[in-house]
Length: 386
Ligand code: DOR
Ligand code: ZN
Ligand code: ZN
Image 1 (spheres, rainbow, N blue to C red):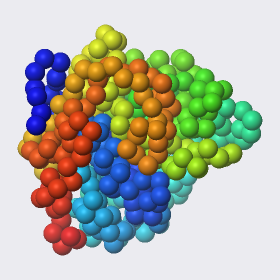
Image 2 (cartoon, helix red, strand yellow):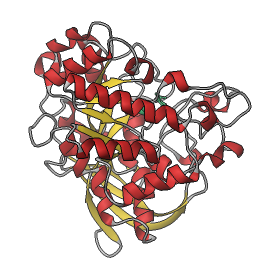
Image 3 (cartoon, protein in one colour):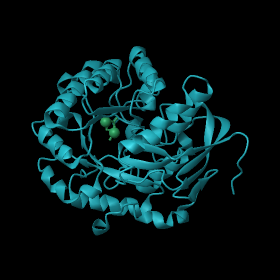
Image 4 (cartoon, rainbow, N blue to C red):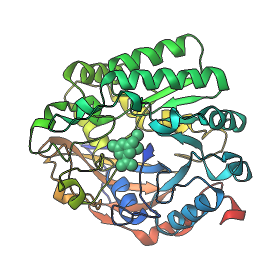
């Protein structure tokens, strides 16, 4: 039972097109049950999952395996990206299993990147790129993580991605853009007519590398790294103007033990906070309410909802949000990664209830796994892989 009324806001379910659910292969970091709970708690009803599983999701068989696992456990709708390999033709057998291809920095600068890009172009799917140039990475022992991967490495990565876009005729989507220079480069590429899109994250818009000299240093390690104030502010302004094509969390959970270690892996969870970080900025008068579109309708249409490639927000994917002042605590997360670089932040909204395809899957801290029912088969479900 939910009560609507004063202080409640009904929004479309949020759409996060860059998450890592870690299953199969690294279920100790996250799995489809805990990861999709994190999504629901953050008002997210659809996620697109990255292929850097162990082993990578870069064949039809591995994507089909992920489909079975996610279909079995996920509380939210989902789609997958296909990972890079030297034999990507294999993916032509199962275009219905992925919504795009993904390139990591080393892959982006490999010889076969152009071939992978042409394959995605042929399929009419986006090539999602983590654009950093590994040749510009530096040894950062003792120095902040941002020193290891300077802003110029991102600009060089974006230029490489845009060349692929031009030469292979591919649609390139640069994800988690973290510097002002990269934003400018991408906007001018768009103006020149290239099929290039990009997204930004809440952490690059709201946090700076000053965290690398605090007790949150290990938790805040992420790639691309948190930047200086000038870059943070450039990303935030772009967001305020609605310039990116989407906002994504890059929900990248690792075990608390890993993150506490001497050399922690990059990434942290994001799904539980993103919507409420945005809405809290909106209520403080710093962002327009329209920014929510970047985390719902815009990414949905980007990945092809209209074409029926995936179905998002079509039949009552809804989130009901309430006003409530609260303080972010990592140990209250439902993700297996119970920590956050936003520790201690004061937020003004919480998720009250969530509906996926018209079924209530969450209300006031409770999850309704049974409500999934027909969710099992993803919409537009590729029968032969099921
Ligand atoms: O911080 C990151 N974590 N950046 C990436 O590109 C990968 C991700 C992960 O999978 O942990
Ligand atoms: Zn990345
Ligand atoms: Zn990622």
